[in-house]
Picture (cartoon, one colour):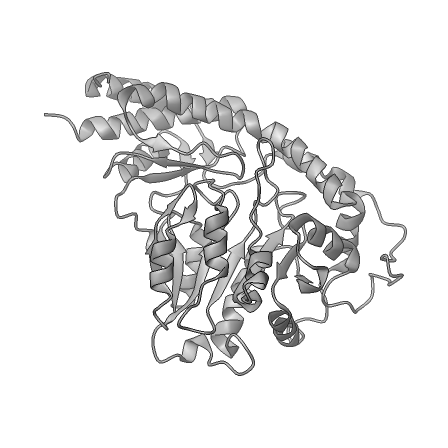
Length: 412
């Protein structure tokens, strides 16, 4: 292990400050070349009839048109009748699902979560997705933290937690989890599907945002929807997906899938919210994407753009931090993030130094409920938006800041 000289590191940092950098690795945003891949979707429609002959410019088909539902069904191995199409945002559909359960309950005869005798609780694998945690905070849902590793959540902890009748839900990202990039193992999926919670209205909200976002050959992707149905738990799981990072962010198509009871219940409530969603956009996507197979081919072009960025960042981490034994990091095979675990007590300081040097990262602790990382060690890196060269520069600055934070804590 090489010795770090704090004065030398500080001199190097002063030179970085003088460069006036402005680099953003804070969110998993597609870069312009990725967005350009979908510009063909802008080809004007001349035939507005879906595959059934329905004119998509009119009211009707609140579940979404068959053209796009069939593509999603084939892509995710979910029966099309279990799928409801929404607007452009799966996060919006997750929020609405929690809101419905808080206001009306999980079923037509259930007690609304907001009127339970105790505080409703959600199981939250961490590090995880900050926007999931923000939804819980918005509704006053207490978050129960469980650990996560390469196989997924700590299932012993999950199975223990669901014995509490106040635990009403759980967030999961089973494929290329945000931010660790892990893919849940078959055993984890099987155990999730076979949970027997004390609260009969317990729901798993499965955010499958990265199901087709492979960087290399496609990994085997677990299908919780199918496993839950086989286990007699089809109503326990809601699965969400969208094309937000497949075509256009904020201009795609989102969906939710669940058992038939949940589908009927959701349909009945959302009928009071809206008559239908944007079926013209649904048809535009269905025509452009064409089929599940063509969508997968489209994603290989995304991978070709993203892969060099991830490999560049990982190469810098390996070259700059590994020789000093500082931290560890994930090597994802898909998704949008790299999870960096620094020595305890140094993540906030590293983030502070990086921000001052012009490298924007997601705040330290953001990947944990309430924004509190008990070890102050985790940072989420999002390589997708900067260029390869910018990623190299940003990663070099990040490593320098991590070395300074470490050296500051090990100075006699």
